[in-house]
Length: 159
Length: 272
Ligand SMILES: Cc1cc2nc3c(=O)[nH]c(=O)nc-3n(C[C@H](O)[C@H](O)[C@H](O)COP(=O)(O)OP(=O)(O)OC[C@H]3O[C@@H](n4cnc5c(N)ncnc54)[C@H](O)[C@@H]3O)c2cc1C
Ligand code: FES
Ligand code: FES
Image (cartoon, rainbow over all chains, first blue to last red; front, top):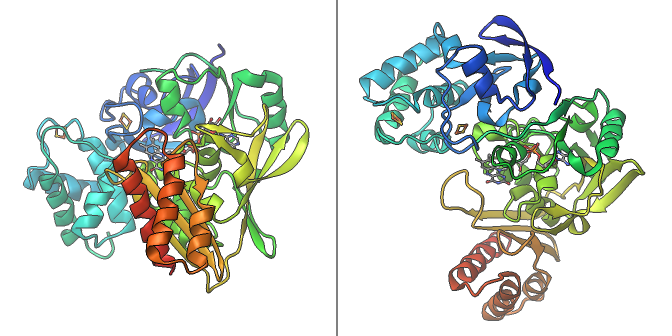
């Protein structure tokens, strides 16, 4: 099977790589780029732990091949280190005890940020619906939902 | 799990894509959003070892006003319908259905064409497009053809697409402003496939009633629709419905039958 040449911008860094076509975007960011905030739980779209952004669009990195992301911008949680909204969410997760082992947390933060960018004033049901595709095995969801609602309450109109 | 090895092709035009699909025959698969195909590949349930990426083909992203109907490209994502970025000739029904498919990250990539080609018996788009009496436009080595939804869906995960054919889009009739629609999805968890899905589209005395999540494909319940439109008493509509459902549900499953009857009756209520 032939290798595929790709050019991807990962967290702002231009990468040129030769990948096996079957390499998932998740394995690419974890193994080729060494970015391990992206976690793999189920590899079939159900758990949400692998969620990243491709061209700013929420993406299951287990359901995309790296080859399909040629010429795209990929953002993992590491790439949001200085993002004010992610920072606020991180703080609120901390205050609300919204994590224990942290396995689901990168995906939770990605989904929460995406929700708040589309809807700055979500109610609890909206938050719970937005988290339906994210499975947490140890903390339970109350703290996570609380954290996201807390972050929403602290958002300023220009965030 | 990880997929088996395959070759990846990203043709620049639809014509090239069809050439590749024809050249590789049964070992080729188109990949659009990948939101159904990649899980299957990860489970090693897909036999294809030649992937033809159609996700960037401009032809599949188009929308066109055709007068009485609208052409909607196969590559439009569920999220585009959810966000109102794609036209909805069904007065909000398509938007409503799209926003109940899977999760946002899956909706941002999964496409209407991929969903129909996949033909999952419980999927949302095949049921909605059947209720809307839409047709698929298909391009293949032999040229273009138009396939009504009812003829396209043949069974569980199977369609009447021939080897090498690609769905380019759908012709969806425009509903008049006074048409009534209903979409009732019952699932165990937000974002999951339907345990039962009822879709109803009523234009005056014409009612199309579709049930999905029961049997091998989305099915029109013509007898129930006719009984309702003829003004039959409620118990008689319900009996006709129970009869139609019993023919579709394969095993002897009283829970499934009761559930399908409930979603369909609710849909009928909403268009009454
Ligand atoms: C966690 C999860 C939950 C889901 N829940 C739901 C749900 O509730 N309801 C629902 O309806 N769906 C659901 N889905 C499926 C989802 O809607 C998929 O997006 C959709 O079924 C496939 O679209 P795709 O573009 O990703 O197709 P792909 O995965 O790329 O392809 C699917 C199939 O279609 C073929 N194909 C793709 N494009 C074309 C084309 N243009 N012409 C011909 N063949 C083509 C491929 O070869 C493949 O066989 C879910 C998926 C996941 C992962
Ligand atoms: S690993 Fe991608 S959704 Fe679970
Ligand atoms: S914090 Fe452990 S899985 Fe969510």
